[in-house]
Image (tube, rainbow, N blue to C red; front, side):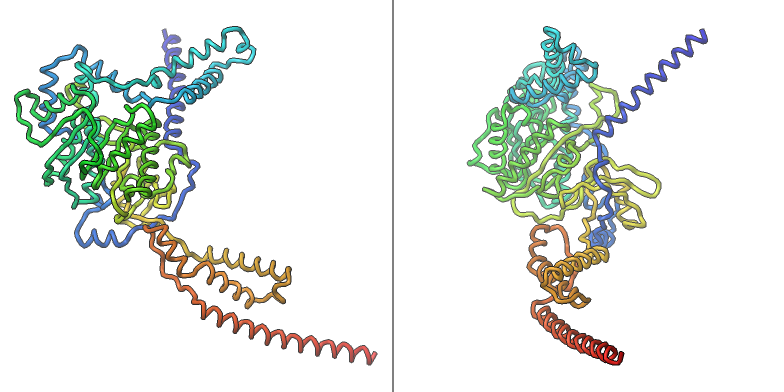
Length: 567
């Protein structure tokens, strides 16, 4: 008995030892910042903290804190959803809702036949390496076909794309699976607009791919003082529009709709009407081709008067769609209507998470579970998003947290996407970055921004490096015969030439134009006239030294000749 118990304990320990390293590797691959060099180039924005102190604002409510700790459904919406689930019961609703949610998380966008063949080839290589298949085994007749069939079977659940048809019981399953998750994602996006632009008050809202009408609920709960005159909701499923209408009528067919909402199944023309707020959540995945996605994004941008919000699921597939939409909108903002990225990127450059770590950029929203489907608690919604604003950029761009913060005793690890399109792993402490900024990092959440900026460094080390480079250039010119002799004054003259070329005031203005978010420190740039005068003075000094040196050399030669004659 004792031997069997010890054997069972050993097996369990072996299983734990086998699973734990795999779990750690998965986490490291997801948030792999080992290739990103640590940086101490971040400093606090003192003007922001001075303004907060004057207004008595706590560090937890700093301007970059845009994420809510926990999102809950409004009571009216929760009660209406409960009424619908009681009225239209579905067999095994919990099981079917969880299956649908898992399928939507795993589902990928439609790929071309060439891309699908590449995926099959990669999967075959992975199977061979895992199972230790040798080349001799692959030569057997029919073995390659079996491997291909096995790879296709593993890829089929995720890549067997077909448009989702929500009809009948499927809509009720979607209500149980995605109501809280959809609502939490759109609330996180709209709450950022409200926090950073409190003067914005939408008058009309357009929701493409409206689904259960979560955008209407989120807009009315966040912009409470706004007097929205028109909500236009477009969804190709008539049954989905019916359920969304019933949710707005307290779940009753004869209920009264308190908000001015209109439902359609077709998209209106982008030339007839403009909307203050345009939203598209979890819909681009349902479009068949990249060309169709670009057309939809362009028409949504043409209908936008102020803000355009695009949301997709977190992960490789959703982030890929968001990244392509972002690049297309940047192109459109240069060609036709001017616009800029409001969130989440603090820059217009290439995504550093994609270029440096090859990982998707997504964020997290915690929400209270729907008690009718799951037990009481909270879940996490991972989503990728982009918010574009019409017009030139007027707001300040702070570094954004692109991962969870790691809090330790006396310091905090933060992974920041900065305004210079670079990732930085910064270890914040009170001694190096100030108490105020350190307190902000202790309460910051994934997706928040920090009131800090990238330093524009003009330190002594860089100046020493410039001096060494100048000395090496002077030596080269002496070897080529451009300079007669080497001394400190020739180095200084060359240094003034370098300063007059590289640190001219026009270069300072061009730096500000290219980096509007950074502030250059005050620096004394030499004028052209003063540099010319100094060059002439240095040349005169050089001539005087040359004459003195020639006299000394001639006297030494005379002495040598006299000594030789005496001998």
